[in-house]
Image (cartoon, rainbow, N blue to C red):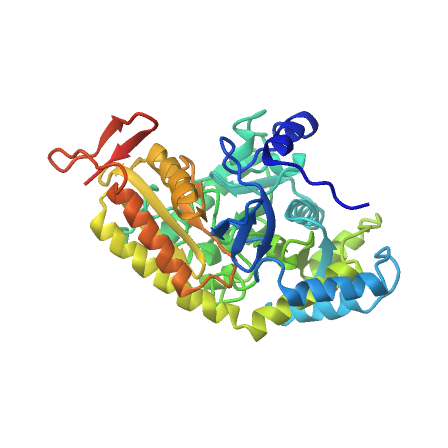
Length: 462
């Protein structure tokens, strides 16, 4: 039976009836109905093409022919319960191991980043026999109950913070407690973890794990200060805990210079557990946890079998292997270095022109553009950020989204095939929107003013 298609209005009406309303769409006021995609482009039902700056999941590009070919070929040959013996899971694990420090060599394949982080929590607690967990402020690690509990981004909107969860400051050197002008922000932020551990111990708690994204995304595309992770790991290990690096958003070469974002912290740092997900399958659901022999042995010794019906199935592994092949053959890490540097340079030039741009930060194709109404006070320009997103979609067919605690950071995590020309189009379009080409700004004494147009409320600036 052929898939039935509907007009956009019909699809929206049926979605409202059939799909839970907490499952929200991008551009909820006027969603884009996407019917096909290729590379870094999305196409709507009218054939209009959109440049995709959002889909880090489709890591090597939408519908890459090498990925779809590998998926179809393996699906035609074998896709069975993962408790049957097959070669592809071993081949895939070996390929992943080659990208990692030697001590990380035991893999557990699952289906999503949330599953991976939940399993990482279980591994840490089993190995340490401790319960308490330390997380960064504004962190998000997944949608399972166990992960909402360790995600301040979520639990503050719900039941609140559990007594075994402990939150340390986000190491944000732009607007955090220790900034770029601090002589050693990495050490200073790490010491907040040390202080917290001491407080937990005084109250009778014991640390099982410190969880952190290698580059905090929901926190606003944050680049951790140098030395932070190694020092935190030292303090956490001394407390009997483990360091869990969440690479679900940032792994597989997105930072360009390294295959994993945790490697930006230097060769002397290695996590005890790494979780990975989104880009692994280029849109196919596959994720993974990797850890040490010792931690895996403790998990085995609990006497409870672990199995995952779909995690590491032959089709998922074939797709994962194909993704690794494309990253290598098309030099996508090199592309992330070149295009990411060019995009950052263009955005830095915009910052020199537009006072509303408070910060440009990032590495490779993981970049954030923070908008503020006052550079000294760093007041978030949330409404302007939303307007920029809206106008880029409507006027330039560029889809982008915001992040950060105040949703004032434009985030760039496009497919890794993003080009120099794409970067130039994005920068040119942002420049035009901020300049107010279609809505001439009214300025006074070099200050930002909020004005009301007929159709939109938006912020103007010098």
